[in-house]
Image (tube, rainbow, N blue to C red; front, side):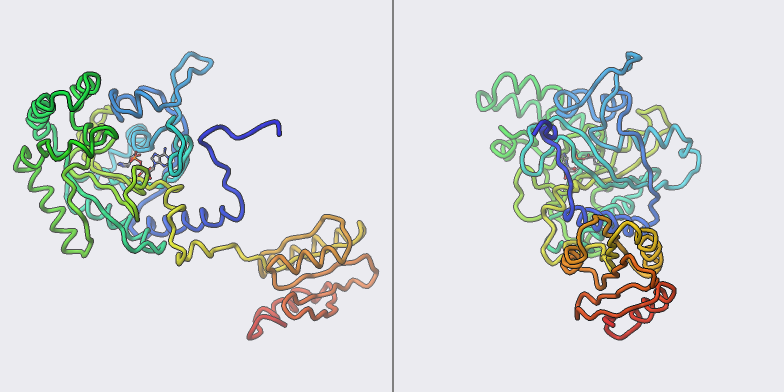
Length: 422
Ligand code: HAM
């Protein structure tokens, strides 16, 4: 074979695509039910946007972006995530002047140059939501309700919701100081290069593959440094989750790989909590709108990784079984029958999904293929002056002659029959 797909990318083929579409539909219905409106932004954006929003020192910006120069010499980047782009579009379109809370949702491909492995791809898909304009802890909880509600509709039961606060800058500043001191005291438990790296953002140590698990219990946690307002916000979020029956685990070591977060952060796991198993990540980012040049506007959001979610779908999920049903096949023998076959298919589509077999193979082969298709009937159109077709019930294999002109009435009558199997 001459060409292969690029490393870290996937083709989503039938029948897997049925799951994807079913999952996306569940998210769309959930977003509708909470009043979120869809938004689609470009797949590439000016590089500066992500450098600023996601953070200059973050892994995403330092190692994982697909950045290129276009023919006009502009630096562009394939979006590694969508929150920054949504905020850019929110400001650029003037949505910030509307007032109240702007609730937006999206789905689409994201790009990160990472080492491909199960659950980690270079092109992957996220579905997500952002609520912009409120500092109320109740909106943090609504956000969690949205994602939990979609995941429950998909059949996920034992979800592991991890919750933490990373505070505002007023809490983080003193925390960074004590954390840096503690990192210094670790001596040779941490190498020189890593020590330098954590000087820029010491919280990242909890996220590190090399040191996170090993050293986290020797380091102070942010709760000791929270301002009263930050502590109060977190307390109310937890109380509201309790009051609305959402189970969670407080994880004082949960930090996120993107720099824009303030206060509430969360991740959702299912099954093993391996490095790649977070199905969802999100949190509050109260400074990002202002950093992108807008007015001071708090916001919160989440994104779910669709590849990971679909790989983890419980077998009992309705989405696993969803297939767009094919009801009818039109078999067509001979060139001269083509016009009638196309017309018959058009009539049948008024009742159900219909595929025309235009392969030109023998009647027998077409009927055999129809038998395997899962459709309920095959309409065989042959070259004849009779203007009648053969209706073959694919469950009972009975055949009936039906005049072309009577086809719609006939198919409707079969549709309404008790078993639909006339
Ligand atoms: P994130 O944690 O970087 O957050 O990504 C969210 C989810 O995307 C992850 O939990 C994971 O399921 C999936 N994901 C991330 N990277 C990959 C990858 N290389 N391959 C497959 N799946 C992946 C964000 O992107 C934030 N924008 C979330 C957010 C929205 N925060 C506020 N609003």
